[in-house]
Amino acid sequence: MSSLKLLIINGPNLNLLGSREPEVYGSDTLEVIQNETTSWAKAKNVATEWYQSNIEGEIVSKIQEAREANFDGLIINPAAYSHTSVAILDALTLFEKPIIEVHISNTNNREEFRKTKLTARASTSLLEGFGKKGYILAIESFL
Ligand code: DQA
Image: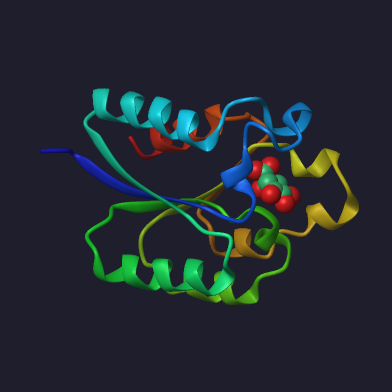
């Protein structure tokens, strides 16, 4: 039995990690990050479910479904939707467990438009600029 069960959602274009701007996001694929993070979590008795979508409404539906499931919390990298999506913000606002928003890059060092993070208004904490390690740090903070 795992002591904690966490849902990890990744938004648009994160399926292309590895080949997408490796100088910004690193050279690991999402699959590698998922496998490494999942093994680390398992060793700490934490179960993780991973979901990736490029589609805003699908992410909204997944967050809504997660309200009915018995997750202890949510880790989300909404990717570009972080800067634009009131729909994802509203869905997150209805999620009653802790939420950690993760960004692989430090969005504050980048273009101006990335400084606005609508979705982070609903999150308990925000982790940015730690690369792929951000996912492990997020899980660790639940522990
Ligand atoms: C990102 C940062 C966003 O600005 C960008 O649109 C992404 C990835 C990150 O993890 O650093 O797709 O969320």
